[in-house]
Image 1: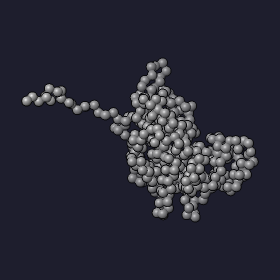
Image 2: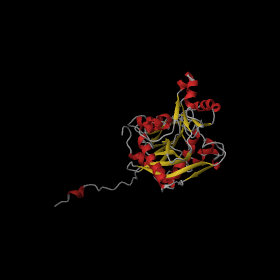
Image 3: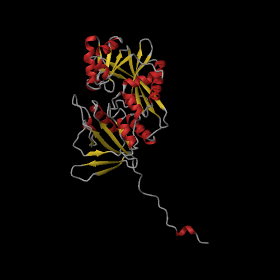
Length: 384
């Protein structure tokens, strides 16, 4: 009997290794937090495992241009008061907008456009409007490109302190007293606005509704400081949120999804301004950090820890967040926990509170970066 298989060509296993997932790290942007985004990108670029991922750094300049950036974390770090920005000398980048094409294309003057290869996942490290607020997420959804972090709605609502508070309060989470000043209200009847805001009592915190890193935020102790503070906030956003001061300890909690999508809460951290600043402002966060104490884990009773973690996961779910978020709360002298805000793309340098919280919870910085990319690769785009 003849063995029919003997005449068949032998099947040799492929010696071509599978292609590593290509990660586009997108940073910079048009917002006032451009430099903070660059600093965040420096940390992520250093942490990405090049044996597991191909990395394409893409900077968005302050005028909105997308450029192919050098893979040089040191160029994206702050040096004293000298803050980094996207170098626009590189070739321009065209992003895919078709569901059948995920290739980035580099444009060099006088040359034929060059394909940089398909992108498997985008790690968007933009802070503030025109990036963290759902705009970039919407662009990526149009192109059917997976990305790290929350989707369009959660990103937009999380960026807007007004609607964030509406959603949290609507689901029964405790928030502090506040007022919103729209552009029409401020221009049309300033006296009525000032009267309404003063009912909150002093001191007050005046904030741009859609900004972060404490940009444009002022602490106001009396009536005389109110108008200048509102105008300062309006330089960053025409809509302003005014919050009553809450006396208590400022605690923070990180939320991170497991690979099955279950959100988990980190250990708690605490921010204490030791001296030199009226509150945790931009200078205290990024320039003069020696006068600020960041404690992780925070020294709080177990029941307070449990309550903050519970509220943090609830806030994550209420907002429809994905991947990661940081929830900031106040623990008052009366023993209450009040949710202040949620950040869908928190500060993410290795020294930022969010990575520190996960480091003391058993997930170091490289593992945290890897987890977020793996989550994004597993998650479908579009309606979900």
